[in-house]
Image (cartoon, rainbow, N blue to C red; front, side):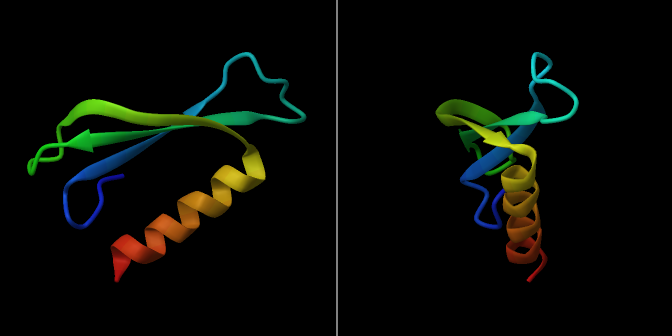
Length: 65
């Protein structure tokens, strides 16, 4: 997902080592060019599925407006 200002993009990556009953997700926030191309990693977080889902929905609301 790319920020409306095109300066950041965020990736959501399912952790392949997490158990299916309690999946975890890595989120990576990247600096990116105006074209939305990632250039440099800003941070990585490991979240439980519910928290990552909530973050995704918040970002969709922000980008959609």
